[in-house]
Amino acid sequence: MESNRQKKISGVLQEDLVDVLQGAATKGGLRGVIISVTKVSVTVDLSIAKVYLSIFPNDKGEELLKGIRSNTPLIRHELAQRTKNQLRRMPSLEFFIDDSLEYIDQIEKSLKGKENPISNPDLLNKRKKS
Image (tube, rainbow, N blue to C red; front, side):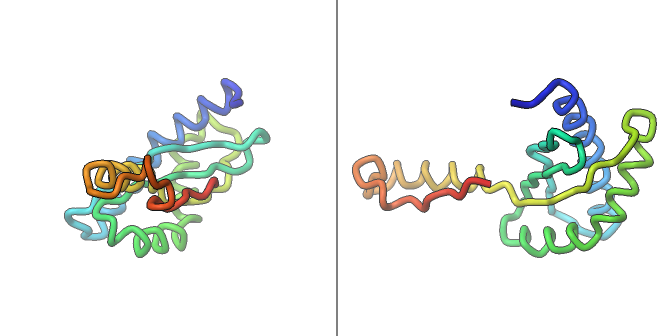
């Protein structure tokens, strides 16, 4: 269970990450790409922040994630500048793709289709816990 401090830091990081990533995408000339920060979870010692991103369109997700991961030091520096009055130390950032919307869409399509995963659970891919 997250403490109140972890929740506050997660919220601050999530808000600022949205601004930083969307700003970088528009400056980089990416048109028609939406980067959404769906969740930020901070470890108990506040040293690592796991950032879950939802990228639309899905086919550009892996490519953009590689670019974001390669620019993590610059993103961390920008966040540190924005949150210097709120945080003493900036946590390390780890970026992941959030596939929950894609998973929900797959379930919905399966339920509307001929082969129902409720009667045959082997039809849906199992999700990995991260």
